[in-house]
Image (cartoon, rainbow, N blue to C red; front, side):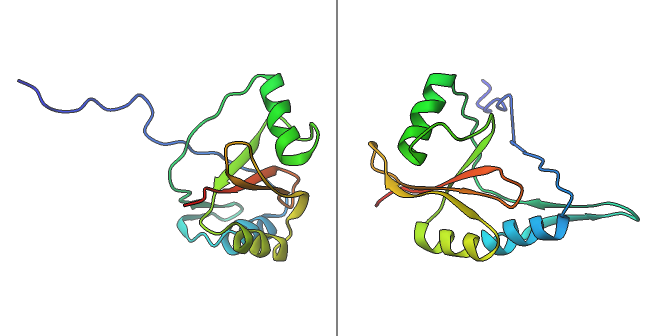
Length: 136
């Protein structure tokens, strides 16, 4: 008998963001979100950092669903084809840290129909990020 569990088809999700202002991006994501680098890649002419973001999921939306989520979180259709949604333990604290490090509010915090507390922001390069807190 074989009681081993087969490996899932995907073991990790990594999203690679590229920017022309590397230091600003590192500050935004490391200091603003409070993330510690798990790996640093430094070459003669290039740099990268790996940040552990916890559990990852991939959400696939059709256009009407994306529009419905944008309507709830931002009041109208504003996000592009990629938007991060990050669960945080303290929405207000996370928002304040990100605003102090270059985030721009897209829409003030809302309570969603499913009970999450959400706020939509943009990172320094314009990528939209939903911060959400699930009430206890």
